[in-house]
Length: 191
Image (cartoon, rainbow, N blue to C red; front, side, top):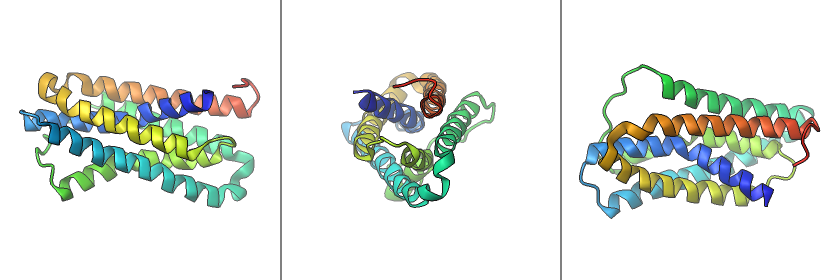
């Protein structure tokens, strides 16, 4: 049960970038149709599921080389991803307006861009001894699908009000998961 909860929290944390982009998509589209929600969910959820799987197998390949420090690698990767999300949330940089297109090229670029952190999370999962990659991938994919589909609708109704809050929540969740992994491996907590 604890493994499923960790996978679900990881899915929520990783889906926040896709949620934020989906909110912007909904804002750009204006009148959202179910087709828009399904497309955003499928693109972002699909790539958020694929990337940790790729990262997991890459990490598993190199695991024997870094076994003694694997918990530190997982901790550092998750904290860096989370800190980057927090930095983006508090950044004063003006972002260019979102493109209303749901075309192949536009969605491919956005799906890859929002799932790079999931690749790093997959590498971190490979460092965890009892991680079930298939449960994690399913949780990440389904959670991101739902958050992305809902994000498009939220964007059309509320605008950018929730974008920053989503990025902050995602960053905090990922940092806390990194700390949990480190404390478990150091024997401080026994979850």
